[in-house]
Length: 68
Image (tube, rainbow, N blue to C red; front, side, top):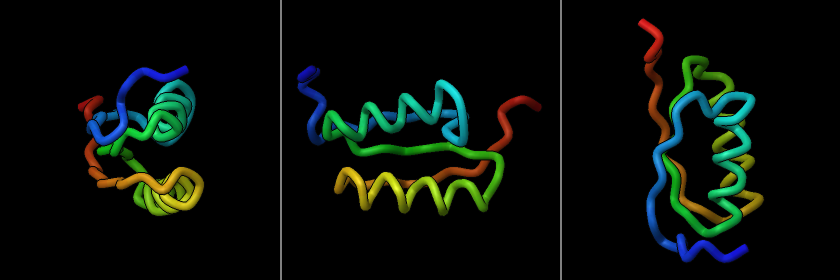
């Protein structure tokens, strides 16, 4: 599906698992650059690296717990 998102930036919160993780992957497939948020620093490095290598996208990270 082509959503015409190539080169646009998407902000994904809770990107470590579940819906947030899936959304990050699907948006990267569409060519979006990502700003992804995690609470867990270990997950953020691993997930970012995987998205960059799999989809050749730009990924910036944020570490903030929005539940508080």
